[in-house]
Length: 338
Ligand code: FPP
Ligand code: MG
Ligand code: MG
Image (cartoon, rainbow, N blue to C red):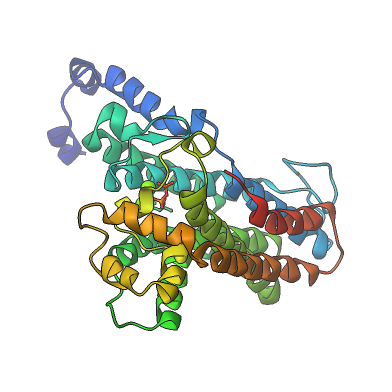
């Protein structure tokens, strides 16, 4: 109407091209694709699709128009496939923003997005990926799935906030570990848990038991996965990881290995409270952790979470190729090297 005429330039196309928008959008496209083109493990979509297939098999649901697999209950429907895509998109958007927050220099063996294009562009690129993920999510057209997946974004932000808090020196070990696991759930496991739950909702929206089993598998696997990541930061090489190692302490972050090590070495408590900011403290703390039982105790926790994940899948009726693979992936976490 009249209002639009007032608001829009008389020739929007000429105006846009004078802003060289197409060239700008080409750059935006290039930046957006940057992390996707570098591969990554694709673990989140893999888990979401396997969970979709396992849930379809468990309930003997036949998919009429499968996009993955043949026409059987092992197949995955288009909306479940979209959950895999959205999970990877949210993950990638969060990595782009994370690299800005962490002032990262490298990811996946290459310069990080912020190192190439700077912080301002990286914030926009992360937002853009998130916007595109939201569109795919809405195209599923199921409010319960939309709110379940949106919860991931909320949890990721809360996780980043929780990570900036540090335990006071006098806090007990149980409480420290509890807080660490809570942070880990928000930062990493929620993405696995809620993607798995969404896949299960798309199998059968009314099967609450199935939703909860899928969610709990993702939660336990996700926590085990992050505990492995936190361990690798101490023991892996930068070649193996494609990013600098020993990064967490330098960022002031106390993860499982340090928290456990502080039982044997109380001097770590002071350093944790001060975020390892004193001269040479990050290096000193690292030495202490490597000489302590911290890594061993973290590995025990990894075993507990990965076995719990595997046990949950064992409760699904009608074992399938997908459910076997989900068990295998959970139990393989303890041996992961990158
Ligand atoms: C990597 O952790 C980062 C995350 C798991 C989540 C980051 C989340 C945000 C920045 C909140 C904003 C979220 C969205 C969806 C835009 P890390 O720094 O421990 O691991 P790294 O070594 O791979 O960098
Ligand atoms: Mg981070
Ligand atoms: Mg980071």
